[in-house]
Length: 254
Image: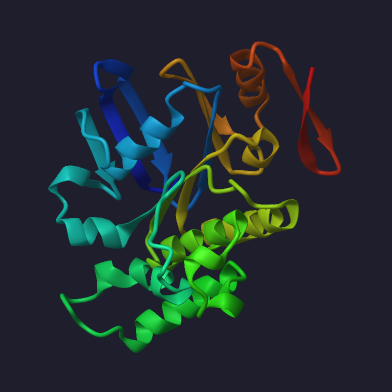
């Protein structure tokens, strides 16, 4: 069995005076793609923020075997990359400069970008098919194009763990397929990927699925496990059905 990439032990998270979840534990294995799925308000995004150390709370979070809070910020940023929902970036920056922001954890203070930095940025922009507009300001891009640039910034970190909250927002079907191929290749190469997704059919392409409802983890298991499908149907109140078709899981609304 692979080692643990992210382990939460007895974690409690609050937003203001509201407790989103309490005493929650979860262990995600390294080198796998895990999708987090559930109805609105289940606590999916909050869970991801706790994994990233962006939302303090009670309990313990371990990243690659080390306590997350004890890691120096630079080491944490080198090991874990983040792509959040509705991220704001200065529209005047060029696509290339935004992707280069992903290299900051690897650079000394005020240092010039190295050859390795430029190579990582080029690779990330090419992987997201954004290399052709590397010199354009972000403000000139569509919502889907902006999302691909922000993904490139996360990829440029070349972290061992990549967390993504609704990464398919604004992406059309062909670029969602490109994203799927990219994530699968990353996991095959040893990167741990965790994604919060509304698209249940896409989430079932992952290695593992975490099913949440009302701040609880209802199930955590392989995407093809019938128990995973049963949990999904249950948390969506029986309003979906999951079928196998052409070697893919198809999700239909009832």
